[in-house]
Image (tube, rainbow, N blue to C red; front, side, top):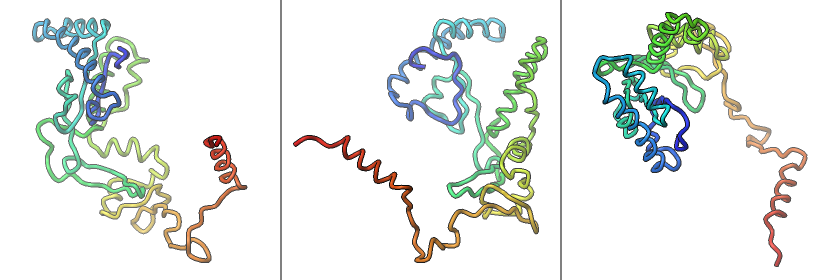
Length: 240
């Protein structure tokens, strides 16, 4: 983007002004490019949708950048965005999450999200539905078909359409079953459902048995490690 590439930047819960390499230059160019679009939008009378679209597209073709930001809080990069879509976070939505030991849990919604904020998956669904309709009306069914199938109404709809169908062992996992597993959840991937419980996959050596002496062993294969080390020493040695 610093080099002028791209026309639309869709941000999902990340402030690139804080995290991107060469962040100061990125921020300078980003503001310059998004301002080109803002100035073009400001020249259009309110409510004239067709002229607004033409102005945005014209600015993009001249090097501008149209920015959409999805986040739960205001951000630095969000100040330069043209559209901000407020998202819901844990507690404000039903969230299926996994931690470092592959343990999946369901954290159920216990409070309303602020204003019109929505879970990410339902924001995606809304975008897809909004894109499918005009392409369908324009008779471009091949393009419209790329956005069909996002008729999700709830987070569970998205979960069942995604994880339940496509993940390894996903067919054994539903919201009802995750709810019954409580905070313990299960370790992915699921391999069965028995006696009212999702059967997960234990991590290696969960029984604490590593060998005859009870200690873990780091094995070397055919002396490959020694050869690599020797080669590295030769490359980094200097003449005396």
